[in-house]
Amino acid sequence: MLDSPASLNRTAARALLADPDAHALSALIALTCFIGDDFLDEDEQPLTPPEIREMLEPDKVLLADGNLEKVAGLLFAVSGEEFLEEPAIFSRLVAAVNEGDAMAFEDDDDEPTLPEVFWTMYQLELLVEDSLIEELGERVQRYIASLTENEAEDVEEMLAAGEEQEIESYTDRLLKFHKLSMAAQLRALGCKPEWLDDLDPDLSALLREA
Image (spheres, rainbow, N blue to C red):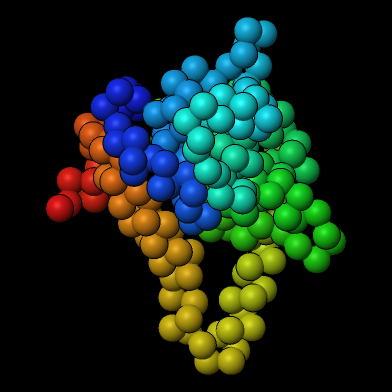
């Protein structure tokens, strides 16, 4: 389970919420310091960004552009299943969680990258403490497959240009970087690594590092 808000570092939480590089899950945990850990309203719907802003006003918490939409993306996902079935909604979720802007991939030439898809699913799975991959509907699976095909074409071009080293692990390197970055944010917040022991031992180990 996530740490109790009372055990977290409010000073670090305030700084993180003002940081545009905050990861969505880190920002969500930081928010609990100021508004508690119940993100549903009386109708069991997720709190809206305006409602969250209003709840933060007494503590004069500053939010970097995009952080609220990153959090809203996570809350939307865990309160319903639309993103599992509809590619357009899935794409907007990935945009919100990664870019802080649900409309970031609305242009015809824009689409999420595989690392962004994986990073979104990773954060969601940590939040719900369960695997979601098998829950993805057929249309979303086909959408992700199309992204894979597009990136495979890019890889072929790089191989033809003799750029094997660049390919080596673009996705792996980016995900490792994100994980290191989020571990530092969670450590600063005072999150205990125990809740991650079963979910991701590697991230748990990173939190334990001094």
